[in-house]
Amino acid sequence: MRAVCWNGKRDVRVESVDDPRLLNPRDAIIETELTAICGSDLHLYNGNIPTMQAGDILGHEFIGRVVEVGPEVDGLALGDRVAVPFPIACGRCFYCGRGAYSFCDNSNPNAWMAEKVYGYSPAGLFGYSHMLGGYAGGQAEYVRVPYADVGPVKLPPELSAEQLLFLTDVFPTGFQAAENCRIQPGDVIAVWGCGPVGQFAARSAILLGAERVIAIDAVPERLAMASLQAGVEALNENDVGDVTEALRDLTGGRGPDACIDAVGMEAHGHGLEGLLDTAKYKLMLQNDRPIALRQAINACRKGGTVSIPGVYGGLIDKFPIGAAFGKGLTLKMGQTHVQKYLRPLLERVERGEIDPSFVITHRLPLDDAPRAYAMFNDKEDGCIKVVLKP
Image (cartoon, rainbow, N blue to C red; front, side, top):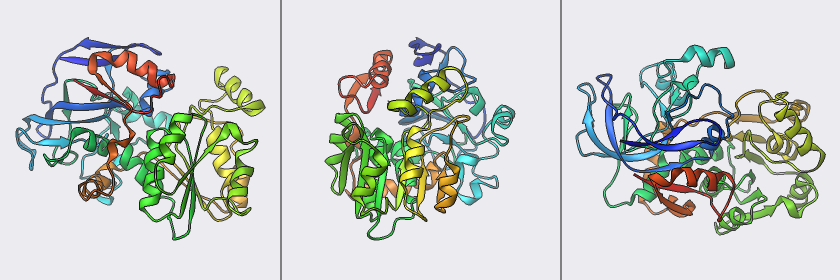
């Protein structure tokens, strides 16, 4: 089969590889209908996530049809069209039993690697390093899905693949980020980053009852997409001297009720702070660039919440813990428990509350993945979200 393979920093290739096969009675094989490049994939593309190996198959956003099913998989049959959550979960451990699927204790066969870095291991993820399981990803013609009796959700035939694809990651991720804000009537929510997750976080905040959402970015195309959503105000960080002060001005001096960092480890800064973070990153004095996170903590009102769906991988410098403590902030973060959200969000799509395909800007064949990665990474041609057709 053909698959998108990582071969080093900024080196992805579409290669012919062996077809997947069932390895466990709870496995299924999915023929991919549509897949996408996620912003998190760019962390792999740029070499920021350790334990990648040449030839690893990328991708964790995909839907398709069941073409083979293990004998212990109940509820799936050949030909079923399914969405597959990006975290892999056993459905039976302590965490799965509490709906915390991205913390699954059993799905990462390389848990010892993650434990060395983080103390504990999260769930295994599709196409996201050997530290997180070494699983082949979904940017391929076929995918092996472990614990297929737990993760995949059947999809209605009347909805298009583009309407359904983002139920596997970015829509639930944005929704969980908004839900973590504990939104109350009248709340103002600020969202850093208008990439795909930021777009869905902003839209989800409106769905959950926020009165105003202020979306912050420096890329005009992303801000334009955000501003098309009812109730979302676009703030170009290049047009304001200080984002924190601008948000105070927009909220009567109090600050947003909750702030969402949908940027993560590869934030771009300006001025002295940006230069220092870039220098420390290049000198390996810190793993991540926490520019958006610092701003979110400093801008949030007293007693507010900072929600962090943006991925962080290691250590950061000058983390404003004093500001977080002094203002009594609640910080909520972590990988998304997609299995918890997929069915309820599918129902919202079916009711016409949201069409997730609004975020797509580019549609390409799988063989064009190297060009798509470069275009997405470099923000060329107004690229916000790329879908790939095998």
